Length: 586
Image (tube, rainbow, N blue to C red; front, side):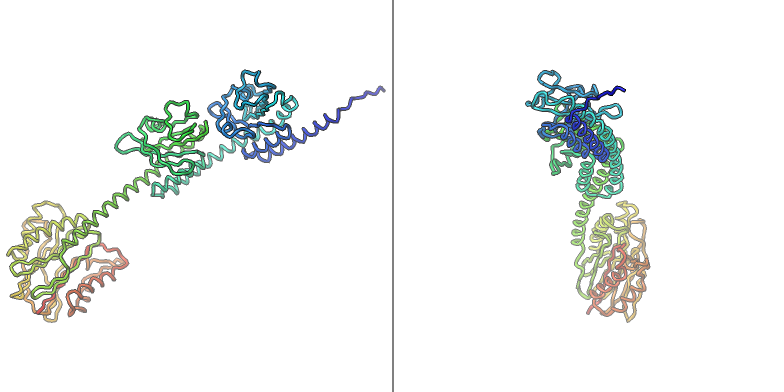
């Protein structure tokens, strides 16, 4: 049998084959181990390529949605080139590799008119497409300052390595897109659940800026809110490289921000240098996305992102912002309305404080000593201002004493009290009896037609020469009199003032002696509630009056206020309280 002798391969070729197999095994293992981490995949790929060829310039480029290639990972390229380089698909050697889905090897780029020069010293280039699911997912690009730097052996081995990484890169991109979508949904839920409770607008916008940056990295963020009076966007919040900044306001229709507001549609610009609508606020900005914030089909503002990198924002980023915008708009509007409410309340509180200060000046000193009488009076409002009031009048040697309680509480009751107080002060400086005085004031209040508001009052007139107290009532709780060792009520007929024109008011005369006591309180005492919603009531008031009937007018006043305050200490005061204590003296 004839023997056939097969030529043996050279030792160098055998070693190259063994090294190639080892590299391919390493590539397969690296692609499998990092299949969900795109950044890690690109780093591992650059390391494996280094074992095949000791490159000077290395880049892994990814296709963008706007039809370009951008550098996702590089070695040896200047930072400004790596960040800004955009190669149109079909242009240059890398663009040709995408269109043809085939490796492009050029020994001398000076002889190839399609070459796009990004770095002056380059003489040779090798571009290898990474294809998965019949589309190019990346391009591996090597460049050298020497002509003929890459041979067919290198390109063949790189094609094999690329085939190991292409599917892993495709999977990593899909996984990244799914994770981004999941993160967007979580962020929407977070905004709805957590950020709606943030009522300080600046705090809210700080949070919004942070979550947007986590989803879509940017170099600058600006939030504009619509001026309520004219078509102008006011710059309310801005960050540049994570530091707070402030830019100028923007009219509707001006710039990309104004365009988004005027049209109600988002604006995405991959290269601002080619868009005539772009207005520069931050030097070096190359891409921008502006999304209108809308509530009930009305634009309330614009969220704007800017980047120094061209094509930084993708259609997926735009979709994410469009999803976020309604939630952001709702939380911003909620916080803005709360701030307006706080400003209104602060302004109202200031007005009420001023009104209370004025009201306290309108009330006379609570301690009054005149011929034959020791008088103590006090008003304690349930709100800032009071509908209760008291007053003292002197006319022709007589002393008038008024205790009044306007229906309702707060500012409206206080204004009505001021009106009634002025009318009473005018009527009291006449020779009319208390009943005639109340009748006169009642007619004046009815004439003003204030509506359902009315004034309950007790008015008394002291005649010192006769030691006579004449009283008339208009719906206020009956006053109490202590004389001849007995505490009793003084029943006064009469309806509140300001309801009916023909109401009549009778006079009741009390002849008093030194030591006698007269006490008048508003219903804010007897109707005060404790934590069990039980009323303070008349019995408790009589008990404290009996226990202190020999004390001075001021002491009695202090103790009835202290007792009702202790009783209702765990319940918010619901009504104004006013009391007048009169002690007849020598």
